[in-house]
Every structure is written in C-alpha cells, then in structure tokens.
Length: 159
Length: 464
Image (cartoon, rainbow over all chains, first blue to last red):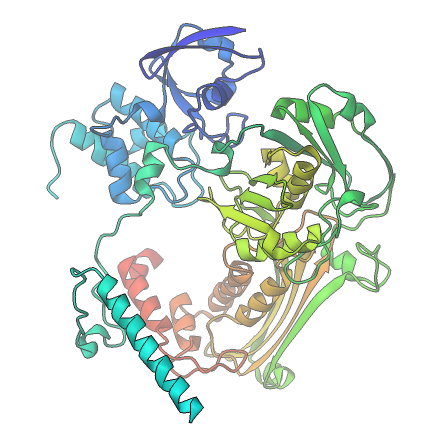
C-alpha cells in the first residue's frame, strides 16, 4: 500500500506491506531510528512520536492510519544551528543514562509544553506516565522538563 | 672485544633513534609539569576537588538528539533477520524437529537446530548451558530452532511452521523440593545442588545457649527480570575469510568473545566483537545469548544476520534475579546484642548456573549484615530448577539477604522493646571489626551514616 505523509515538515511517501506499523515505517523506510522498538505492544513508550500534535505510541499505529497526517520525530527537534531546550536541559542535568527511552520521553514532554507552557510537577509526571525508564529513575527527567519549560517561557534560569 | 664494539654500536644507534624521535615531536607540546604530590592526596574522609563539581555525560547530547545508535538502529547491505523458536515446555525430550515447511516459505533463507552447533555449551562458571536445545529441554525459554528470513515478520511467521515432537519429562520448580534426594534431576547427575558454601565463625550453639531469646524466621524473595529498555540484540557477519564480526549489546565483550570462540570451535582471533551503547544492562547482558546462532546463520547464508529479542524472548529466556529462601536464626542478649546467628540460604538458580556461584558467594559473605557477630554459621546452596535461569543482577545476592537480616532486626528490636536505630548502632561494625570471613575492616562509617541519615529524615519525629 502507498502512504503519503508529512514527517518533520517534509512531504514523504512510501510503499509498504499493510501490516507495517508507523514505527517500522519510520525506522525502516525513512531511516529515522530515533523512535525505538522497546516492547512493540504499547507499554514502554520508547516508540513515542507526535502525530498531529498528539504524542502517540507509533508501534500501535499502522502506516495506513497516518495517510495525509503530520508526524514529528526526535530527528526534527534539532537543526544544525540549535537544539530544543528539552534536549539541552536533558543533557545538562544528565537525565538520560542508557538513553534508550530518551527520544520518546522528550517527545511526550514536547507535546506537554506545546499545550501547557507552565506545567506543575504532577502535570509533568502525568504527561510522562506512558514512558518507562529503567536506569536513572524519573527525578532528573522531571526536573529537566521543568527547567526547559522555564527556559521556554523566557525566564532564563541564572546559571 | 667484539661484544663491546657491538654494544657500543647499539647504544649509538639507539641514541640516534631518540634524536630522530625528538626531532619529529611537535614543538608546541608543553613541558611536563610536576605537581606537588602532597596536595593531590586528600586527607582520608575529606572531599576531593571532584566532589561537588558538575559533570555532564559525554553521551548525553546524542541521547537527547536521538542519534545514539543501538544495535537495532544499525543495518548492513543484504542484512537478513533471525528469530528464535522457544520450547514453551519446561522439561522434555525432543523426539523430532521438522523445519522443512519453514524452509519452503518464500523469504526464508536458512534454519538452524541445536545439533548444528559445534560445541553446544557455555557459561561463566560451569559450562552447563546449551546454546540451543540438543535433545533435552531444561526450561520453557530454551531455544529449539532458529530461522533467518528477509524480514522480521517472515522469520516470525516461519517459526509457526516448525514442528517439534516433545516427550514431556518430570520437572521440578520448587528449590526446596529440588534439594530432596528423590527429586527429579534437572540435569543428569547425583543432585540438583550445584554449588554450596559454608562460613563458620566462633561456636554458634554456644552462642544460642547464652542468648536471652532466639528468633527464627524464614524470608523469601521473588524472581525479578531486568527488563532493559533495549532488548538483547546482535548482528553477525561471517565473511569470506572465515572471520566473524559481531555487533552486540553484550556488556562483557571479552568474556563473550571467549564463549563464542568455544561454542563455534574456532580460534578467538577470528572473532571480532563490536560493542555499542547498551540500552540498559543491569547485569542481564553479561553473557552471550544468541550470538553463536546468528554467526552460524550468517555462515549458512553468507549474509549479515540481525537478531533482536522480542519482549517475550526477554522475559522467557534471559537471566533474572535469583529467588532466595532464607532461614534466619538469631540469638539476642537481653540488651539487644547479637550473640549468635545461623543462616541457611537456598538460591533458586533456574535451569543453568550462569552467575549463581558468584551470587551465592556474595550473598553468603553479606548474609550476617554489617554487624559484629562472634558466633556465626552460614550455609548456602544453589539449586537447579526447571525455570528461567538466574544470573547477575545489580547486587549479586546482596539485596536478598539485606531484606532478610534487616527485617529480622526490626522484628527483634520491636520484641525486645529497643529502638530500631539503637539496636543497629549497638551491633554495627566499627573501625577494626572483622567481617564474617575474617577481613579486618578500615574506614568503617556505618554508625556515622546511620546517625546522619536518621537526623536528615527526622527519625525521632517520624517515630512518633
């Protein structure tokens, strides 16, 4: 089947077998390997991408369902000049250890900050409830999201 | 005479080489500065300059950008995919394996069964684990057959076409049952107990006689899976020169290389392992899993072969944390001093040894806790059962015994009417204490740590 969609602002198309998930479409057809295969059944959140503004488990969505829709992946968050405040704060705080859950968590957080520029701790935890991390625990991750939110609101934190 | 001339010549030549070497050096290399050594060695228990400094992870940026390449993110020209058929039965004799239907499927390039593995055993302590089942299944997660196909989906579909006839055998799942004389044997042999250890110090019976009260409790812990976010994954590439390159999520590549050389029965210098960032290890990626299978499938097909565990594979067949059954008998004086302790640890090892021996040793040494106990007797057994094998996982047996001795400590403090903090302070190791195995301990700060922690979280207020 043929799929046409927008990925990180660019129009793309591919021809794939009908059982192909969005996750496999991104990884295998477009070489966007930032979204990871953790459990392949929608439990771990490592495959999270943003579909039309909603953070979604891409392993649970078929390629056929994204016809004409717009996808944001981790690869679209940074460009050659600058990277996203979330990515910067995750790096500064050492929020990611093995890093496998990172792209999914950052995209879940991005949807949160797009919708709510000033989330409290509970709202951040709630937004990340679908993303598992097995290494560091969530403290530094939640702190990094809060710091990024603060930075994006323009109140740059004193170093 | 001649000898002296030769020596002189050699010295001149060496001197000349040094000069050439010096000429080639960059002029900008700074002179070596010798630091005053005494300032570099901090006083004991003082902070070094590194403490309190911020440091960022060197791989942190790539993680955030999604650019870190794990095994499943790599691919090579012509690469095909392998999947493993699991036994699904915990003890059985394999009567027949029929892979012919699977091989006929379009897209399937090769299959592999246990009899094709050159040396079908490996393991860090005892080589009791087969790479693939050859004759007998020891636990439900054992690999029975493998398929390599052009896509992962085709390989998975082909697994369903493999027909296996099993003759079920009597299995044993409870380690206490497995220790009995008439228990079904997991592996052929006299006993399911494959490792035991004893620590003896003082006279434990004498200690119990002198005790005001004796406490006996049994504690048990459950099996725990590591669940790394990244499942086990490898890519094998057997090249035309008879060398195999493995990209693997292995955490201990040197050990893995030796195991792979053993199982493939080839010289170790023909095996190259390229490790990348591991997406979570926690002890679960310390030994080889499917690497020899992938290597042989690559040899059969002449293609690079990628094998990634499904989450089911991960739960069924990778190592786990040992379940322990721990009997604690502790004799206390009236004022809360531990006079004697007798411990029996039974470590449910599952089907294979893996790191059980190491785990057992560590659990044994630590089973008395960080307390001064003059009379101690510890016996520990690692036992085979027909369950998923157990191996290394953060702490090697230490968390299990800690749960037991600290739980008992609380119970005893409660019964004797002593503050749980005081009873620990009273018994804790001090400078110069000897560990259960006789090691004299230095820089002991158990009491200081306990007191500081109690103060920090407001133990006195919390108690009320």
